[in-house]
Image (tube, rainbow, N blue to C red; front, side, top):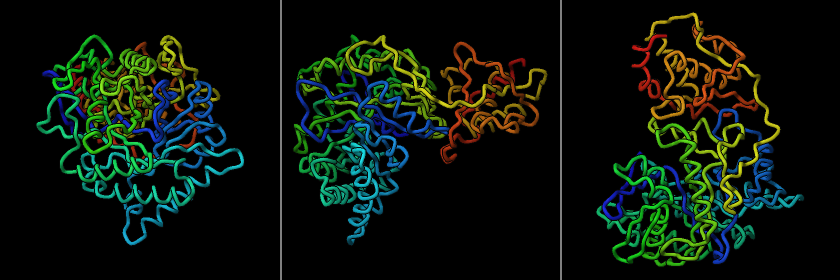
Length: 507
């Protein structure tokens, strides 16, 4: 994971290309009223909730806007006729085809629009209310740059052209979501007013922004206050939220009370430098995880998201765009236990949800944006759980710690043990409970089949929930399995930090 740094008044702000998207809205922002709160709906889970269950969850919580990362037909079919506004995505893997020369890219874009937009927009039930198309995702971030960076502008233009040819111009808008490292931080001034695009991509960014001005499409960039707090030594915690800490821009003399506003205004400044000073901005991805890191917890997530929503609701905007309300999509709706952990260094990636994997709310949050931070979201209904069975380490066994470590390592490599990471909700368990937690996750990931608990005769199935007050043992869901392609915890990655404890703790 590559981090870029900036600072305000002597402390550093980490710009990470992993998470928060700021997108420019396609239509002019209403200066008097914020847009309804949106959420990101990702489904990188082993047993993802049925789309119809998720749609009902959205509706019961009055969520009228969602951002997707692809165009899965079952999800779009579930959204059809609901009136929920949608941003769909054409993933990076499609960029080579969409950007192909000699007319091939134009044809690929036309085919994609027909298959993924037109057929879902024009249905008897009113269709899917598709508003935006995200063309790729973070193409200039880290390793993506060499593979996809040069493709994003031609792909974007071809999709824009196909949208127009389909009669959808002015109704559906194409954009490219960027990570924060499109901003130039090498030797840059710490002030938000100094924001500018990286020199190596400045010409491409100028072309992309010009296309947005022409078509009314949004600009997208990733920022994350959580990342600043985690990776910036000495970063003032109140500034990651919306607290008492403040910092002043030495050029504009404007005062900032949150890193969110400072990040936002660096983007505003960068856009101004390429001729788009008034391009509206919507936050397409912003949130706080609840596990997998010492500062990723329910308390901080509840604080950040509720303070953010209150900030949005008051309509004050940012210092460089006062009285221009924010337009945001929270990240994310549900926990996703198949998300990439970047070789174990980002275990919090699987815990961004406002809801657990089964649609259970984690904390009170006012999704209406009216300021009622004590209001609990409504839980998903009709969720199909597996039987109330758990897998634990057999209590009468005293296996060799090295052997046990190997078995826990194996179970974690094929399930999700991110909560066991240092600072996670299950990081304080003793060795037998660590083993039980790992075995149970492996058991649930494999639909409670007996052979997946009997890990070399070490595990046993029980019906009593072994959870502690702080560490919850998950129960699997009775939905079709997603691909296991994202079970990317390398052997030893998660458990390597835990293994020494097994050598010294008494079972």
